[in-house]
View (cartoon, rainbow, N blue to C red):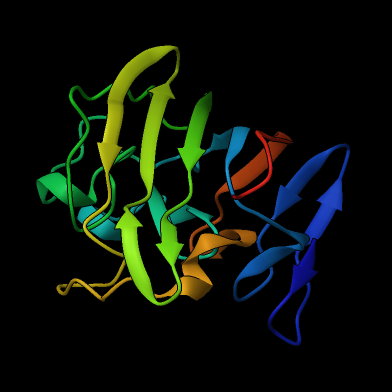
Length: 182
């Protein structure tokens, strides 16, 4: 993983902790299967989006929200496992703060013919073994309170983890490419 900021993330005993800024894989991916485990802070501090906030980005453009959503009210498309700013999860499968949680993700990158979008990015997500999104298309890349347009650059990209100033920890991250783009 590479880091976009001057301060690096820390890794100890197989656990990745945020330093500051976004961290991204060196390799870029299109279609992938991804497994990532995360832990929100214990004791829980803050509320809403200020409690255990982070994110997992596919192609560094499409976010699955990481948040402490156990007994924590926030907007629907901002809770844990949401396709951030677009779709809430089908169910809140969050565990209490301090417990390790998992996302298992199958991601199909968007398809283009030249500059023209022919198929949007599609995602299936299991949160702690519970199906929360099934073959759901993204409206476009993740943005706060807007929908950005697709562009050919979104067909491949790094896997990224977001630092939102909350001490969310990650471990057991693995990715399996699912085939070459046409």
